[in-house]
Amino acid sequence: MFRGGGAPAVSSVAGRPAGKDGMMLVADRVTGFTESVIREMTRLAEHHDAINLAQGFPDFPCPRELKDAAKEAIDADQNQYTFTWGLRGLREAIARRWQTQKSMAIDPEREVVVTCGATEAIATAIKALVNPGEEVIVFEPFYENYVPDVVLAGARPRFVRLHEPDFHIDSEELRRAFNYNTKAIILNTPHNPTGKVFSHAELQIIASLCLEWDVMAICDEVYEHLVYDGIKHISLATLPGMAELTITISSLSKTYGVTGWRVGWAIAQPELMDAIRKVHDYTTVAAPHPFQEAGVTALGLADTYYEQLVQGYARRRSLMLDGLTAAGFRPHVPQGSYYVMADISIFGYPTDAAFAEHVVRELGVACVPGSSFYEHGEHGRNRVRFCFAKRPETLALACQRLRRLREQT
Image 1 (cartoon, one colour):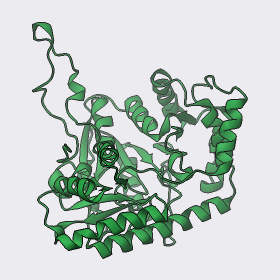
Image 2 (cartoon, helix red, strand yellow):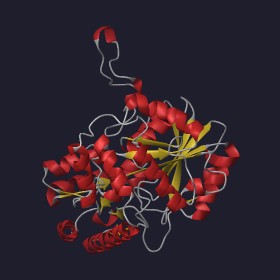
Image 3 (cartoon, helix red, strand yellow):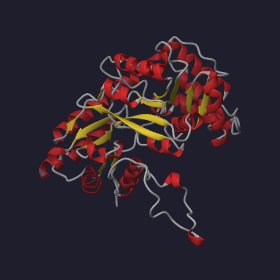
């Protein structure tokens, strides 16, 4: 049975398993949050043989060049550890790509670490840089991993709302969140789950506060190439003074359709990177060698690849938006990423969790309850998130099934 019901939050240890003599067997730090709601919806999708529009991964193949490069690396017995902070060729490719995109030079020997996906990079950066008891600002709605990452580091999340209908920042509200105990802010742009792309003006507000309070910015930019309608993605690190305070994180997963390869990276100035590399070393040692080799090929693809990538996802976005609208949803148009948040209030379900469970069980389509992206679940109770990183025929079938909702209202 789907649990749902809001984002993970710090809680008491009541109900924690106890061993002999009443000694608690489970650490306090893991009692404050549930398992991933997104991954739980994937399990329900498999159980009900449903179309999985919950978890963010494609159902179409990655570029042939990447598969060939990975197979060549395996055939060449590239199966052992790389340098713990990443294959030199991949770090150099990351630095070249950064120079081309951002017109900024970074040192692949001192300022890059390759990790087991962006997921590890974010968790590692928080553990390496944030002390227990310090605060980390988190915009809500938020990707569900961020809060557990903060809690597992012994720190405290401090939430700042993105306000509808366009999920904008209230600059005064954000200013009030900064204080002498603030150590970092997590910025995800393009944004999951809303598809928001933070504007230059909003980034300037964030940068000015980080510089004023000497606060680090941990920037999750895994959807950096997925932006639509002529909107430009801007990295916070490129704003004046922010290179020294920013940890920029990305990965192969979303841009190249290889979420299972688990190759990500972080970019930061040497003092911060030295600490991040230490935690990475003792957490995972190294990302998978053959997939790092394929990453060199990926980052060397021509600019036409990225142009075609955006065009393809823009078409999928249109299919998803049109299909949801026809089914009775009120979808928010994403500026980037490959997710759509949609209002479900017209359907009359008591909660987003009840809606998601009904849709996956009865209609064969999996989505994510909106409450899982908020500190207080009630803020997301009238919406759900759909992923459109799927083949057009998959999206068409899903939307056909969802149109049955109209018949039920």
